[in-house]
Image 1 (cartoon, helix red, strand yellow):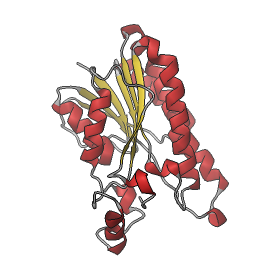
Image 2 (cartoon, rainbow, N blue to C red):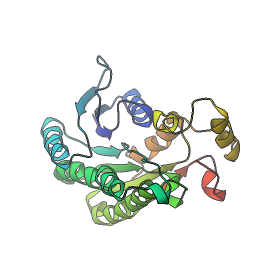
Image 3 (cartoon, helix red, strand yellow):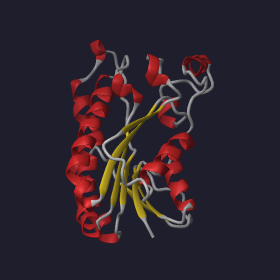
Length: 239
């Protein structure tokens, strides 16, 4: 039974990906600030603050000892929005740990098992904002950095049967989104109208794309970024 580690797996996009995989009969290990709801079949939970490097290394070793991880989905993220005039340079360091260093530590812990089995899937959830967006200095920079990290790993790990890809969502209705945009308000409607498909995405939209990349049959696709954004990446619409 395939086992996938999902950061931020207790809610939003991470939970939707986990639900899709468990519906396939696979196991999911959720890692985040909170545990997922108890009593769900084939779902195991661990908690950690991924901005804490030492705590991340500790839980990575624990998970690697407890589970044979076949795939890693790094979905956990934070935005920390601010215009340049108000931005805190330390936010870049915080988000670099969360978006770049944390998945490196987690993947390093489970990589020996993937290499030994000759199979692995690594998937990053990044953002259309990696192309640039007002108030997103730290967020856009680190998410764009993930694309470079992903392509480097794809080249290194391909001979071992491990693919590495990324999904860059446009606006998606999650708590992160509503933490910045008032729920069901005028700004949310404006953003929806600015997306070519005239709606904001759902966690399930992203999960459907993730299901492809994580499938064993997707072995000839690696080093790619898929923009699941309703067309927002085509013309610089807000997201």
